[in-house]
Image (cartoon, rainbow, N blue to C red; front, side, top):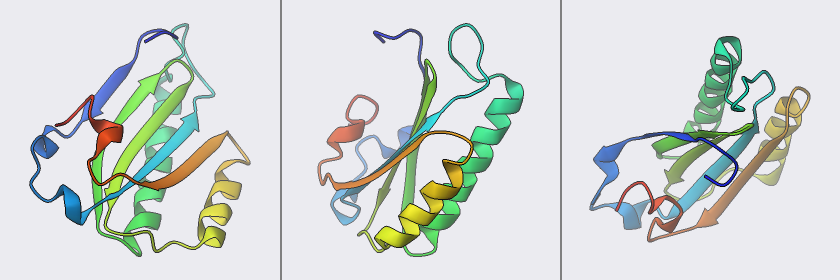
Length: 126
């Protein structure tokens, strides 16, 4: 990538997934990597914390949604986590409260947008 080396972990079972239209909302979460190596990738303890946050995100989403975890991308200073859901049922307050808690330790961007064609992950799955 233009900002350096990136690693992607992708669930390839979603390649040619026939039910994409039933899960038309993309949930993208971008987390700041704080403790990182010279490539901007997380050191072991930071990777553990990022995985814990990812689990928290899944718990939040699964309270109200059917969730499909498509993958994660770790790049220079940032981890992106990629999901699809059936329809957005979280309130603005629920998202804000969650992000406020995480932002006490690191930057977070949390977005939900309609993407029936799964274009946001087209570089990973078809």
